[in-house]
Image (tube, rainbow, N blue to C red; front, side, top):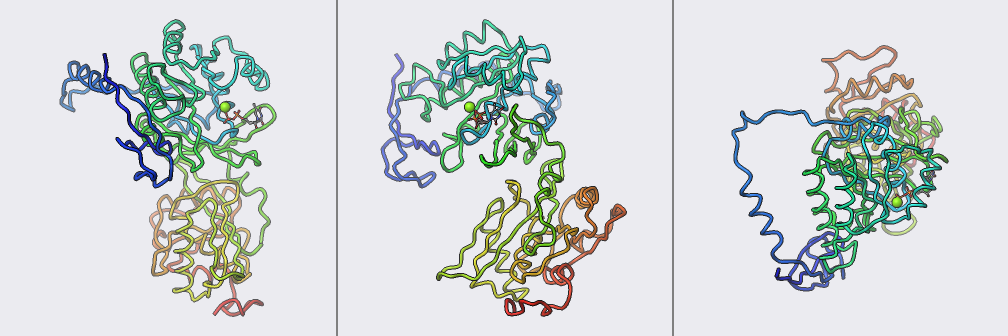
Length: 467
Ligand code: TYD
Ligand code: MG
Protein backbone atom coordinates (compact mmCIF):
# COMPACT_ATOMS: atom_id res chain seq x y z
CA UNK A 1 0.00 0.00 0.00
CA UNK A 2 1.22 3.46 -0.78
CA UNK A 3 2.61 5.25 2.22
CA UNK A 4 1.07 8.61 2.85
CA UNK A 5 2.67 11.55 4.51
CA UNK A 6 1.49 14.81 5.80
CA UNK A 7 2.74 18.07 4.35
CA UNK A 8 1.84 21.71 4.92
CA UNK A 9 0.97 23.78 1.88
CA UNK A 10 0.59 27.52 1.67
CA UNK A 11 -2.89 28.07 0.24
CA UNK A 12 -1.79 31.30 -1.35
CA UNK A 13 1.30 30.30 -3.29
CA UNK A 14 1.65 26.52 -2.96
CA UNK A 15 4.82 26.61 -0.84
CA UNK A 16 5.48 23.18 0.62
CA UNK A 17 6.90 22.55 4.07
CA UNK A 18 7.20 19.49 6.35
CA UNK A 19 6.15 21.53 9.37
CA UNK A 20 3.62 24.22 10.11
CA UNK A 21 4.72 27.83 9.96
CA UNK A 22 2.88 30.99 10.85
CA UNK A 23 4.33 32.93 7.94
CA UNK A 24 4.90 31.45 4.52
CA UNK A 25 8.56 31.86 3.45
CA UNK A 26 7.44 31.80 -0.19
CA UNK A 27 4.89 34.59 -0.38
CA UNK A 28 5.18 36.06 3.13
CA UNK A 29 1.48 35.68 3.86
CA UNK A 30 0.41 34.90 7.41
CA UNK A 31 -1.51 31.89 8.61
CA UNK A 32 -1.86 30.36 5.18
CA UNK A 33 -0.26 26.95 5.81
CA UNK A 34 -2.73 24.07 5.84
CA UNK A 35 -1.94 20.42 6.50
CA UNK A 36 -2.67 18.05 3.63
CA UNK A 37 -2.01 14.34 3.22
CA UNK A 38 -0.31 13.19 0.07
CA UNK A 39 0.61 9.78 -1.24
CA UNK A 40 4.35 9.48 -0.98
CA UNK A 41 4.90 6.99 -3.75
CA UNK A 42 2.82 8.21 -6.69
CA UNK A 43 5.38 10.62 -8.12
CA UNK A 44 8.17 8.11 -8.19
CA UNK A 45 6.19 5.40 -10.00
CA UNK A 46 5.29 7.82 -12.72
CA UNK A 47 8.82 8.96 -13.21
CA UNK A 48 10.08 5.40 -13.63
CA UNK A 49 7.40 4.65 -16.14
CA UNK A 50 8.37 7.67 -18.17
CA UNK A 51 12.01 6.74 -18.22
CA UNK A 52 11.40 3.47 -20.03
CA UNK A 53 9.70 5.04 -23.00
CA UNK A 54 11.65 8.22 -23.61
CA UNK A 55 14.90 8.23 -25.53
CA UNK A 56 17.15 11.17 -26.50
CA UNK A 57 16.96 12.13 -30.19
CA UNK A 58 19.40 14.41 -32.04
CA UNK A 59 17.68 17.73 -32.62
CA UNK A 60 18.23 17.51 -36.36
CA UNK A 61 16.32 14.23 -36.50
CA UNK A 62 13.22 15.51 -34.81
CA UNK A 63 10.40 15.77 -37.26
CA UNK A 64 8.75 19.10 -37.40
CA UNK A 65 5.02 18.94 -37.29
CA UNK A 66 2.95 22.01 -37.07
CA UNK A 67 0.54 21.69 -34.21
CA UNK A 68 -3.03 21.49 -35.39
CA UNK A 69 -4.98 24.60 -34.56
CA UNK A 70 -8.70 25.06 -34.56
CA UNK A 71 -9.99 28.52 -35.28
CA UNK A 72 -13.10 29.83 -33.63
CA UNK A 73 -15.15 32.66 -35.05
CA UNK A 74 -14.04 34.83 -32.13
CA UNK A 75 -10.89 36.31 -33.57
CA UNK A 76 -10.00 38.01 -30.28
CA UNK A 77 -9.99 34.62 -28.59
CA UNK A 78 -7.92 33.06 -31.40
CA UNK A 79 -5.40 35.86 -31.20
CA UNK A 80 -4.80 35.52 -27.49
CA UNK A 81 -4.17 31.81 -27.94
CA UNK A 82 -1.57 32.59 -30.58
CA UNK A 83 -3.78 31.78 -33.58
CA UNK A 84 -6.45 29.32 -32.51
CA UNK A 85 -6.86 26.42 -30.11
CA UNK A 86 -3.99 23.93 -30.25
CA UNK A 87 -4.94 20.26 -30.23
CA UNK A 88 -4.09 18.59 -26.92
CA UNK A 89 -3.17 21.82 -25.19
CA UNK A 90 -4.01 22.65 -21.60
CA UNK A 91 -5.07 26.23 -21.04
CA UNK A 92 -5.79 27.89 -17.72
CA UNK A 93 -8.27 30.76 -17.70
CA UNK A 94 -8.08 32.82 -14.53
CA UNK A 95 -10.08 35.76 -13.30
CA UNK A 96 -12.17 37.25 -10.51
CA UNK A 97 -15.50 35.62 -9.72
CA UNK A 98 -18.28 37.06 -11.85
CA UNK A 99 -15.99 38.56 -14.44
CA UNK A 100 -17.34 36.32 -17.20
CA UNK A 101 -15.10 33.24 -17.42
CA UNK A 102 -18.01 30.81 -17.68
CA UNK A 103 -19.70 33.02 -20.25
CA UNK A 104 -16.54 33.27 -22.33
CA UNK A 105 -15.87 29.55 -22.28
CA UNK A 106 -19.47 28.62 -23.00
CA UNK A 107 -19.42 30.90 -26.03
CA UNK A 108 -16.07 29.47 -27.09
CA UNK A 109 -17.46 25.94 -26.61
CA UNK A 110 -20.31 26.74 -28.93
CA UNK A 111 -17.88 27.99 -31.54
CA UNK A 112 -15.73 24.90 -31.17
CA UNK A 113 -18.76 22.62 -31.34
CA UNK A 114 -19.68 24.22 -34.63
CA UNK A 115 -16.44 22.95 -36.14
CA UNK A 116 -17.99 19.47 -35.96
CA UNK A 117 -16.08 18.11 -32.99
CA UNK A 118 -17.72 17.27 -29.70
CA UNK A 119 -17.19 19.55 -26.74
CA UNK A 120 -17.62 18.40 -23.15
CA UNK A 121 -18.36 21.19 -20.70
CA UNK A 122 -17.90 20.10 -17.08
CA UNK A 123 -19.79 22.36 -14.75
CA UNK A 124 -18.67 21.91 -11.19
CA UNK A 125 -20.31 25.05 -9.90
CA UNK A 126 -23.62 25.25 -11.63
CA UNK A 127 -26.25 22.63 -12.35
CA UNK A 128 -26.89 21.49 -15.89
CA UNK A 129 -30.11 23.53 -15.89
CA UNK A 130 -28.32 26.69 -14.83
CA UNK A 131 -25.85 26.18 -17.64
CA UNK A 132 -28.75 25.66 -20.03
CA UNK A 133 -30.33 28.92 -18.91
CA UNK A 134 -27.10 30.73 -19.55
CA UNK A 135 -26.72 29.04 -22.91
CA UNK A 136 -30.19 30.17 -23.88
CA UNK A 137 -29.34 33.74 -23.07
CA UNK A 138 -26.27 33.41 -25.24
CA UNK A 139 -28.24 31.83 -28.07
CA UNK A 140 -26.30 28.59 -28.02
CA UNK A 141 -27.93 25.66 -29.76
CA UNK A 142 -25.18 23.36 -30.88
CA UNK A 143 -25.88 19.61 -30.72
CA UNK A 144 -22.22 18.86 -30.29
CA UNK A 145 -21.95 20.68 -26.98
CA UNK A 146 -22.39 18.29 -24.06
CA UNK A 147 -22.81 19.46 -20.48
CA UNK A 148 -22.02 17.43 -17.39
CA UNK A 149 -22.29 18.50 -13.76
CA UNK A 150 -19.58 16.42 -12.11
CA UNK A 151 -16.71 17.03 -9.74
CA UNK A 152 -15.03 13.62 -9.36
CA UNK A 153 -11.98 13.50 -11.61
CA UNK A 154 -12.31 9.75 -12.23
CA UNK A 155 -15.92 10.14 -13.29
CA UNK A 156 -14.87 12.94 -15.62
CA UNK A 157 -12.22 10.67 -17.09
CA UNK A 158 -14.77 7.91 -17.70
CA UNK A 159 -17.25 10.24 -19.36
CA UNK A 160 -14.43 11.66 -21.44
CA UNK A 161 -13.55 8.18 -22.66
CA UNK A 162 -17.21 7.42 -23.50
CA UNK A 163 -17.87 10.62 -25.37
CA UNK A 164 -14.41 11.11 -26.90
CA UNK A 165 -14.71 14.88 -27.41
CA UNK A 166 -12.15 17.11 -29.08
CA UNK A 167 -12.46 19.76 -26.38
CA UNK A 168 -12.93 19.67 -22.66
CA UNK A 169 -13.88 22.61 -20.44
CA UNK A 170 -13.46 22.36 -16.68
CA UNK A 171 -15.41 25.04 -14.81
CA UNK A 172 -13.74 25.34 -12.32
CA UNK A 173 -10.63 23.48 -11.16
CA UNK A 174 -11.35 24.47 -7.55
CA UNK A 175 -14.47 22.31 -7.51
CA UNK A 176 -12.89 19.17 -8.98
CA UNK A 177 -11.51 16.57 -6.60
CA UNK A 178 -9.68 13.28 -6.58
CA UNK A 179 -11.25 10.94 -3.97
CA UNK A 180 -7.84 9.43 -3.21
CA UNK A 181 -6.53 12.75 -1.96
CA UNK A 182 -7.93 13.44 1.47
CA UNK A 183 -7.91 17.23 1.45
CA UNK A 184 -10.88 19.34 0.41
CA UNK A 185 -11.56 20.45 -3.17
CA UNK A 186 -9.78 23.68 -3.93
CA UNK A 187 -6.82 22.93 -1.67
CA UNK A 188 -3.35 23.00 -3.13
CA UNK A 189 -2.86 19.24 -3.31
CA UNK A 190 -6.29 18.67 -4.89
CA UNK A 191 -5.79 21.40 -7.46
CA UNK A 192 -2.34 20.10 -8.28
CA UNK A 193 -3.40 16.48 -8.47
CA UNK A 194 -6.42 17.21 -10.64
CA UNK A 195 -4.51 19.51 -12.98
CA UNK A 196 -1.84 16.83 -13.37
CA UNK A 197 -4.53 14.32 -14.16
CA UNK A 198 -6.13 16.60 -16.74
CA UNK A 199 -2.72 17.29 -18.24
CA UNK A 200 -2.16 13.57 -18.83
CA UNK A 201 -5.63 13.21 -20.32
CA UNK A 202 -5.10 16.18 -22.60
CA UNK A 203 -1.76 14.94 -23.86
CA UNK A 204 -2.62 11.25 -24.26
CA UNK A 205 -6.03 11.77 -25.82
CA UNK A 206 -5.21 14.92 -27.78
CA UNK A 207 -8.15 16.75 -26.28
CA UNK A 208 -7.70 20.49 -25.92
CA UNK A 209 -8.60 21.37 -22.35
CA UNK A 210 -9.58 24.68 -20.80
CA UNK A 211 -9.47 24.98 -17.04
CA UNK A 212 -11.19 27.81 -15.21
CA UNK A 213 -9.31 28.96 -12.13
CA UNK A 214 -10.50 31.43 -9.53
CA UNK A 215 -8.23 34.13 -8.39
CA UNK A 216 -7.30 34.68 -4.76
CA UNK A 217 -7.51 38.06 -3.07
CA UNK A 218 -4.02 38.96 -4.26
CA UNK A 219 -4.91 38.33 -7.84
CA UNK A 220 -3.14 34.99 -8.21
CA UNK A 221 -4.77 31.74 -9.21
CA UNK A 222 -5.04 29.46 -6.16
CA UNK A 223 -1.91 27.37 -6.00
CA UNK A 224 -0.69 29.61 -8.78
CA UNK A 225 2.94 28.86 -9.33
CA UNK A 226 2.52 25.14 -9.57
CA UNK A 227 -0.49 25.52 -11.85
CA UNK A 228 1.19 27.99 -14.14
CA UNK A 229 4.14 25.64 -14.61
CA UNK A 230 1.94 22.72 -15.47
CA UNK A 231 -0.23 24.21 -18.17
CA UNK A 232 0.62 25.26 -21.72
CA UNK A 233 -1.00 28.66 -21.57
CA UNK A 234 -2.31 30.96 -18.88
CA UNK A 235 -4.94 33.51 -19.79
CA UNK A 236 -6.29 36.12 -17.42
CA UNK A 237 -9.73 37.56 -17.91
CA UNK A 238 -9.68 41.04 -16.44
CA UNK A 239 -11.84 44.07 -16.18
CA UNK A 240 -13.82 46.17 -13.81
CA UNK A 241 -17.01 44.46 -12.76
CA UNK A 242 -18.92 47.68 -13.08
CA UNK A 243 -17.64 48.38 -16.55
CA UNK A 244 -18.59 46.39 -19.57
CA UNK A 245 -15.14 45.96 -21.06
CA UNK A 246 -13.20 42.78 -20.47
CA UNK A 247 -9.63 42.04 -21.47
CA UNK A 248 -8.36 38.55 -22.08
CA UNK A 249 -4.60 38.54 -21.62
CA UNK A 250 -2.08 35.80 -22.27
CA UNK A 251 0.57 35.76 -19.53
CA UNK A 252 2.12 32.49 -20.60
CA UNK A 253 1.79 30.72 -23.91
CA UNK A 254 3.87 27.82 -25.16
CA UNK A 255 2.28 28.15 -28.59
CA UNK A 256 2.34 31.86 -29.18
CA UNK A 257 3.42 35.22 -27.93
CA UNK A 258 2.45 36.53 -24.53
CA UNK A 259 1.14 40.01 -23.80
CA UNK A 260 -1.40 39.43 -26.49
CA UNK A 261 -4.76 40.87 -25.54
CA UNK A 262 -8.29 40.29 -26.70
CA UNK A 263 -10.92 42.88 -25.91
CA UNK A 264 -14.55 42.01 -25.27
CA UNK A 265 -17.65 43.81 -24.19
CA UNK A 266 -20.15 42.17 -21.84
CA UNK A 267 -23.64 42.72 -23.16
CA UNK A 268 -27.11 41.39 -22.41
CA UNK A 269 -26.56 38.44 -24.70
CA UNK A 270 -23.01 37.62 -23.65
CA UNK A 271 -19.60 38.77 -24.72
CA UNK A 272 -19.07 40.47 -28.02
CA UNK A 273 -15.72 41.22 -29.56
CA UNK A 274 -14.22 44.66 -29.78
CA UNK A 275 -12.12 44.68 -32.89
CA UNK A 276 -10.88 48.23 -32.62
CA UNK A 277 -10.08 48.80 -28.94
CA UNK A 278 -8.31 52.14 -29.46
CA UNK A 279 -11.55 53.79 -30.47
CA UNK A 280 -13.32 52.42 -27.43
CA UNK A 281 -10.57 53.38 -25.02
CA UNK A 282 -10.52 56.94 -26.29
CA UNK A 283 -14.27 57.30 -26.53
CA UNK A 284 -14.85 58.93 -23.17
CA UNK A 285 -11.90 61.25 -23.34
CA UNK A 286 -12.56 64.93 -22.81
CA UNK A 287 -10.06 66.50 -25.11
CA UNK A 288 -7.84 69.32 -24.00
CA UNK A 289 -7.93 68.79 -20.24
CA UNK A 290 -4.79 69.07 -18.18
CA UNK A 291 -3.33 65.80 -16.97
CA UNK A 292 -4.31 63.70 -19.93
CA UNK A 293 -2.16 62.32 -22.72
CA UNK A 294 -2.54 59.47 -25.15
CA UNK A 295 0.07 56.80 -25.71
CA UNK A 296 0.39 54.13 -28.39
CA UNK A 297 1.19 50.93 -26.55
CA UNK A 298 2.05 47.65 -28.22
CA UNK A 299 0.18 44.71 -26.76
CA UNK A 300 1.40 41.54 -28.41
CA UNK A 301 0.93 41.97 -32.13
CA UNK A 302 -1.40 44.90 -31.88
CA UNK A 303 -1.12 48.58 -31.08
CA UNK A 304 -3.68 50.14 -28.82
CA UNK A 305 -4.05 53.80 -28.05
CA UNK A 306 -4.89 54.54 -24.45
CA UNK A 307 -5.36 57.64 -22.42
CA UNK A 308 -3.18 58.16 -19.37
CA UNK A 309 -4.69 60.45 -16.78
CA UNK A 310 -2.91 62.09 -13.90
CA UNK A 311 -4.11 64.23 -11.06
CA UNK A 312 -1.54 66.08 -9.00
CA UNK A 313 -2.73 67.93 -5.92
CA UNK A 314 -1.02 69.43 -2.86
CA UNK A 315 -0.67 66.98 -0.01
CA UNK A 316 -2.81 67.66 2.99
CA UNK A 317 -1.22 65.11 5.27
CA UNK A 318 2.47 64.57 5.94
CA UNK A 319 3.28 61.86 3.43
CA UNK A 320 2.48 62.48 -0.22
CA UNK A 321 0.44 59.71 -1.78
CA UNK A 322 1.23 58.10 -5.08
CA UNK A 323 -1.54 55.96 -6.47
CA UNK A 324 -1.61 54.15 -9.76
CA UNK A 325 -4.07 51.95 -11.57
CA UNK A 326 -2.99 50.26 -14.77
CA UNK A 327 0.67 51.25 -14.41
CA UNK A 328 3.32 50.15 -11.97
CA UNK A 329 3.27 52.17 -8.80
CA UNK A 330 7.07 52.18 -8.50
CA UNK A 331 7.41 53.47 -12.02
CA UNK A 332 5.30 56.48 -11.05
CA UNK A 333 7.61 57.26 -8.12
CA UNK A 334 10.60 56.96 -10.40
CA UNK A 335 9.16 59.21 -13.08
CA UNK A 336 8.18 61.78 -10.48
CA UNK A 337 11.72 61.75 -9.13
CA UNK A 338 13.02 62.33 -12.66
CA UNK A 339 10.57 65.22 -13.14
CA UNK A 340 11.70 66.72 -9.89
CA UNK A 341 15.43 66.41 -10.37
CA UNK A 342 15.81 66.80 -14.14
CA UNK A 343 12.95 69.13 -15.01
CA UNK A 344 12.74 71.01 -11.75
CA UNK A 345 9.10 70.41 -10.91
CA UNK A 346 8.62 70.61 -7.15
CA UNK A 347 6.52 67.53 -6.71
CA UNK A 348 7.57 66.34 -3.30
CA UNK A 349 4.66 67.94 -1.52
CA UNK A 350 2.07 66.73 -3.97
CA UNK A 351 -0.14 63.69 -4.14
CA UNK A 352 -0.25 62.04 -7.51
CA UNK A 353 -2.93 59.74 -8.89
CA UNK A 354 -2.31 58.06 -12.22
CA UNK A 355 -4.91 56.09 -14.06
CA UNK A 356 -4.96 54.26 -17.37
CA UNK A 357 -8.43 54.77 -18.78
CA UNK A 358 -10.49 51.79 -19.89
CA UNK A 359 -9.12 49.31 -17.36
CA UNK A 360 -6.05 48.45 -19.45
CA UNK A 361 -2.78 47.53 -17.75
CA UNK A 362 0.39 48.87 -19.29
CA UNK A 363 3.77 47.48 -18.43
CA UNK A 364 5.74 48.71 -21.40
CA UNK A 365 8.50 51.26 -20.76
CA UNK A 366 7.41 53.02 -23.96
CA UNK A 367 4.56 54.55 -21.97
CA UNK A 368 6.93 56.40 -19.59
CA UNK A 369 7.00 59.67 -21.44
CA UNK A 370 3.21 59.84 -21.64
CA UNK A 371 2.93 59.18 -17.89
CA UNK A 372 5.54 61.86 -17.17
CA UNK A 373 3.79 64.37 -19.41
CA UNK A 374 0.42 63.65 -17.84
CA UNK A 375 1.85 64.27 -14.39
CA UNK A 376 3.61 67.44 -15.48
CA UNK A 377 0.52 68.63 -17.32
CA UNK A 378 -1.69 68.18 -14.27
CA UNK A 379 0.89 69.80 -12.02
CA UNK A 380 1.26 72.82 -14.25
CA UNK A 381 -2.42 72.80 -15.11
CA UNK A 382 -1.63 73.13 -18.77
CA UNK A 383 -3.04 70.71 -21.27
CA UNK A 384 -1.31 69.19 -24.23
CA UNK A 385 -3.03 69.27 -27.62
CA UNK A 386 -5.88 66.79 -27.88
CA UNK A 387 -4.42 65.44 -31.09
CA UNK A 388 -0.97 64.70 -29.64
CA UNK A 389 0.36 61.23 -29.15
CA UNK A 390 3.31 60.62 -26.85
CA UNK A 391 5.71 57.70 -27.13
CA UNK A 392 9.02 57.07 -25.38
CA UNK A 393 10.88 55.43 -22.55
CA UNK A 394 12.36 57.69 -19.89
CA UNK A 395 15.78 57.08 -18.36
CA UNK A 396 17.06 58.22 -14.98
CA UNK A 397 18.89 61.21 -16.37
CA UNK A 398 15.69 62.48 -17.93
CA UNK A 399 16.63 61.30 -21.40
CA UNK A 400 14.03 59.88 -23.75
CA UNK A 401 15.09 56.48 -25.00
CA UNK A 402 14.29 54.63 -28.16
CA UNK A 403 11.31 52.26 -28.28
CA UNK A 404 10.48 49.29 -30.49
CA UNK A 405 7.99 49.22 -33.37
CA UNK A 406 7.72 52.96 -33.74
CA UNK A 407 6.24 52.78 -37.21
CA UNK A 408 3.42 50.53 -36.06
CA UNK A 409 2.60 52.90 -33.22
CA UNK A 410 2.58 56.03 -35.35
CA UNK A 411 0.47 54.34 -38.03
CA UNK A 412 -2.20 53.48 -35.49
CA UNK A 413 -2.19 57.06 -34.23
CA UNK A 414 -2.70 58.39 -37.75
CA UNK A 415 -5.63 56.05 -38.22
CA UNK A 416 -7.36 57.61 -35.24
CA UNK A 417 -6.75 61.13 -36.38
CA UNK A 418 -3.77 62.21 -34.28
CA UNK A 419 -1.85 65.13 -35.74
CA UNK A 420 1.40 65.32 -33.76
CA UNK A 421 3.58 62.53 -32.45
CA UNK A 422 6.25 63.08 -29.81
CA UNK A 423 8.72 60.28 -30.25
CA UNK A 424 12.30 59.61 -29.11
CA UNK A 425 14.85 61.43 -31.29
CA UNK A 426 16.73 58.14 -31.49
CA UNK A 427 13.79 56.60 -33.28
CA UNK A 428 13.88 59.07 -36.15
CA UNK A 429 15.20 57.70 -39.41
CA UNK A 430 15.14 54.26 -40.93
CA UNK A 431 11.41 54.31 -41.50
CA UNK A 432 8.95 56.52 -43.29
CA UNK A 433 6.32 58.27 -41.28
CA UNK A 434 2.82 58.05 -42.72
CA UNK A 435 1.44 61.28 -44.08
CA UNK A 436 -0.93 63.41 -42.04
CA UNK A 437 1.09 63.48 -38.86
CA UNK A 438 3.86 65.75 -37.69
CA UNK A 439 6.71 63.85 -36.08
CA UNK A 440 8.60 65.61 -33.31
CA UNK A 441 11.75 63.92 -32.04
CA UNK A 442 12.63 64.70 -28.45
CA UNK A 443 15.70 63.72 -26.51
CA UNK A 444 14.77 64.73 -22.98
CA UNK A 445 11.61 64.90 -20.89
CA UNK A 446 12.16 68.62 -20.46
CA UNK A 447 12.26 69.16 -24.19
CA UNK A 448 9.11 67.09 -24.63
CA UNK A 449 7.34 69.17 -22.00
CA UNK A 450 8.35 72.46 -23.52
CA UNK A 451 7.29 71.34 -26.99
CA UNK A 452 4.04 69.71 -25.97
CA UNK A 453 2.76 72.24 -23.47
CA UNK A 454 3.91 75.18 -25.50
CA UNK A 455 4.90 78.69 -24.45
CA UNK A 456 7.65 79.58 -22.10
CA UNK A 457 8.39 77.47 -19.10
CA UNK A 458 7.03 80.14 -16.79
CA UNK A 459 4.16 81.33 -18.92
CA UNK A 460 1.25 79.65 -17.21
CA UNK A 461 -1.37 81.12 -14.93
CA UNK A 462 -0.37 78.65 -12.25
CA UNK A 463 3.25 79.68 -12.21
CA UNK A 464 3.43 79.17 -8.48
CA UNK A 465 3.18 75.47 -9.06
CA UNK A 466 6.61 75.05 -10.46
CA UNK A 467 10.05 76.34 -10.20
P1 TYD B 1 -19.85 34.49 -15.33
O1 TYD B 1 -19.48 34.00 -16.68
O2 TYD B 1 -20.81 33.65 -14.54
O3 TYD B 1 -18.58 34.79 -14.45
P2 TYD B 1 -17.51 33.79 -13.81
O4 TYD B 1 -17.70 32.47 -14.44
O5 TYD B 1 -16.19 34.43 -14.17
O6 TYD B 1 -17.74 33.78 -12.36
O7 TYD B 1 -20.45 35.95 -15.55
C1 TYD B 1 -21.32 36.49 -14.68
C2 TYD B 1 -21.63 37.91 -14.98
O8 TYD B 1 -21.82 38.21 -16.34
C3 TYD B 1 -22.90 38.22 -14.29
O9 TYD B 1 -22.67 39.30 -13.42
C4 TYD B 1 -23.88 38.56 -15.34
C5 TYD B 1 -23.04 38.88 -16.53
N1 TYD B 1 -23.65 38.43 -17.79
C6 TYD B 1 -24.09 39.38 -18.69
O10 TYD B 1 -24.02 40.58 -18.47
N2 TYD B 1 -24.62 38.96 -19.89
C7 TYD B 1 -24.75 37.64 -20.19
O11 TYD B 1 -25.24 37.29 -21.28
C8 TYD B 1 -24.29 36.67 -19.23
C9 TYD B 1 -24.40 35.21 -19.51
C10 TYD B 1 -23.74 37.12 -18.06
MG1 MG C 1 -18.37 30.71 -13.47
